Image 1 (tube, one colour):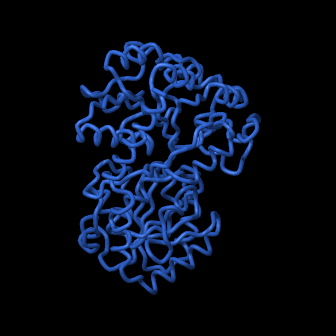
Image 2 (cartoon, helix red, strand yellow):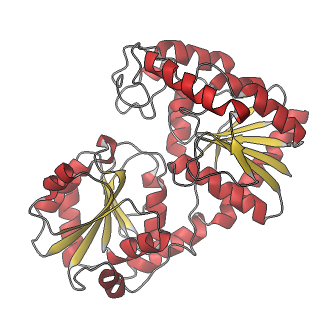
Length: 406
């Protein structure tokens, strides 16, 4: 099979882009032709990758930036002509779209759907909202957007609020020939409630590399990171610690009320002023980690991964923690309840109930759960392996191709 994958960035460009890059690698290993088109060239392009804009890359990025400042994000389909030409030249059988925000226009997807079978994996809400990644408590996307409460927040930093226009545009251009995929039942239900998607949404859970993330001796991992070997250890992880969606403020409240003999690993980009928020806690700040071996040590060094995310879909960090054998304690956010079984591989409480969560963690501190590491690892292998992810993706491709030819 000959597949084209389109995403915003490469493996370090966010969850959706990481899933896209992983899938491209798995497809090639399985003997398929797979070319990965993406917006960012931060990590360079191999022979199997190229910029989604082709020779117009600099011009397209310049005008996209200028138009986004007004409010017209991803409005002009700069990439369409180049993509159509390249897809035909490569004799592509199926086009798989991933994260599109700030990368390609919805118009491009609709026009490509006239010429190729399209699979579109929704990694956030943006395919069926006026542009926001996660509407939080807002449900205007079910009728019509406008007066957006997230105006000014990425990716809606434009001068004018055009979310109503974008939602109407998406309702017009979404095609029956597009096969929509969601990593979670949660996101699938949200997309259906928007009234945009006409086809049944297929669930394909994200995967985790269980050979990269696996259990290690906790004491050894703590020594490796310069931590005390005998202290109860909590892991906090976010690409950007200041991201309000990640709920670090609630995590700090929880940790401040914990026994004083705990230590905290904080993974993610953080400023000196943000470090002051953790004053009084025994913290080790690692910064953002690109080395997956070191990240695996961070998961393994922790007794629990504390994830108070207030907006998420099917986060890879939860899968990575489970694969490393570390239970996840946090909020019932997005698709996370589809990954965590209380008293087996972690514990979840309703969003905002940080005191309830704190009590659960203190109970876990005093009464360790037998077999917890094994339960976490088994779930990761049985339900979220890369082998299963690849097989499910190929099944979706076959369905999309069959639908297209019929």
